[in-house]
Image (cartoon, rainbow, N blue to C red; front, side, top):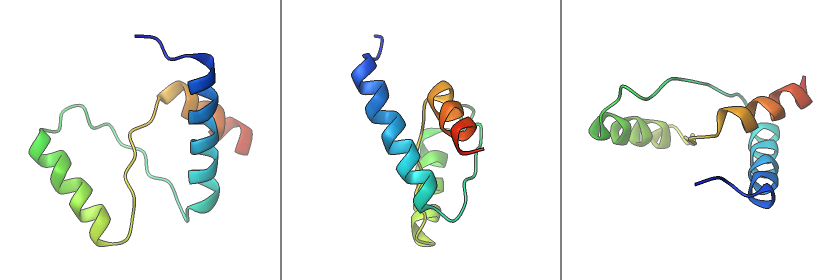
Length: 68
């Protein structure tokens, strides 16, 4: 199902806020991780007061280009 233009704008705003408020960004390919591995990754990130987000590549690329 396609995402509406309004929802895309909401996601862009969320991504902008997350990147400006963060100390860094790490991108990784996760498609080969099992559910258990993904849960473990989320737990470890949380243990060090981090946050893990799954984002739309195209929209996140727009934010990164805007921010240089």
